[in-house]
Length: 444
Image (cartoon, rainbow, N blue to C red; front, side, top):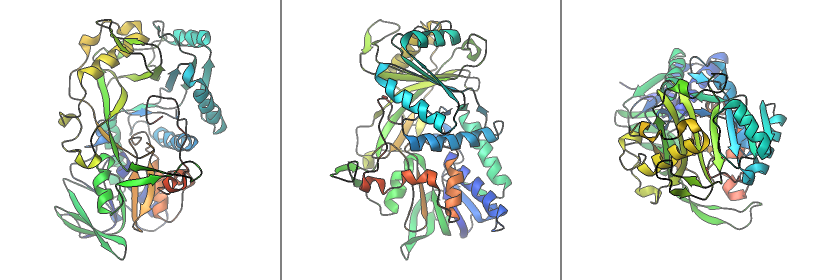
């Protein structure tokens, strides 16, 4: 049985929902205002059943946007607070780039130093090649002119991190109601008064919506627009855009032994992200795959028994309202990865490291991939709507942003958080948008 009332109802048991509930329970207890018993999480399946459960798990600060960089520095500190519980591996992160991105990367490094985030920048093709050869003796990608080596960050195992968060929330008394499908929202006086579910109606004082790709439906239930005008910087002009655009996410695993991908010291290397404008050729046939900017990322992962990673996502060419989100992730044959991804990703690995040449046959052909709901500028919206509905719309940046829940918890208790201010919905009206980098990835 689920309760008929809860002071706080959280929809979604992924990274954001669990983190918010855990941090809110701690805040309530510390302030003598109650505790976890006042918080109910509802999820139509269970913890980690959505995007959090299929995430590659990369944790990085490599963002061109100052607001994203500061928010990620905060989130990295949460990952570092309990690596064991979160299955977090602080191996660092490498951004490896061509000349077209040199200014962007130098700016990221400079601003990381300004906020005290530990990193090293190497510039120039010769020095970059030597730095990478000192780390990987089989490095062979040409045309690299900048290496940003973040000494913090790394990766976490997706499901284990979710379970760790769930355990922390439940230890504070938070109740997680799995198998409860939300079917609508009730309004009274312009605010959300209750959450309708297939197990009954739950009245609430405050609502947190942290549903990843399902945000489209909750957004509609809040009677918010499916298209908006996005102003130019400075608030002039404007472009009519869909509020939600779905991108197909491409990730997979090469079944080499994880300990075969170590650095020259035999240690686990940083998570590696390579952007390149060098032509990419098929590692098997030798055919040209692309002569445009491309990118791959990868890491050894003992949980997945191989090297796991991905490449650039692509836009799903359908209106958001016509896209079937369920079944989600690997259960959806429509949005799992295709041979085109496998060809590009394995060729990208071979382009970078000699050890991966001729290894495509080791690709693990399990269903992988999923879809994410992106905002008009591809960056999150963290804001309050209908007076008491706190929306965490992460635009698929979510997994690494474990610290957002700590900030939302404080806002639920009336304390506005400066780190969330640049992500308010009003930025689309005022034109205070985030700067765009030259990366081929929409979230960099």
